[in-house]
Amino acid sequence: MLTGKQKRFLRSEAHHLDPIFQVGKGGVNEAMLVQIGEALEKRELVKISILQNNEDGKHEVAKHLAEGTKAELVQLIGHTVVLYKVSVNNRRIDLP
Image (tube, rainbow, N blue to C red; front, side, top):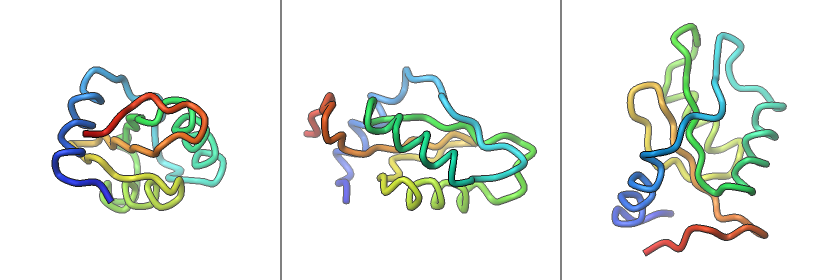
């Protein structure tokens, strides 16, 4: 679990990132979770956009993404999800 200070730090790190995945009408699927997991391994911190045509609630989608990738939900702001997972091979972010 992340502390409040760590989440604030990660939010500031994620501020300049662009969303690299979009969750649309089809919702979250296994292939998407695998791709997001691989991106988390490379980057540790990713932004995901939830499109307006998504039929699930944004909180459900964020929870499903976090659980499916075994990542920490850093932030859900508007329709943007920020996830963080410590990389095994590509450590870039040192948490305070």
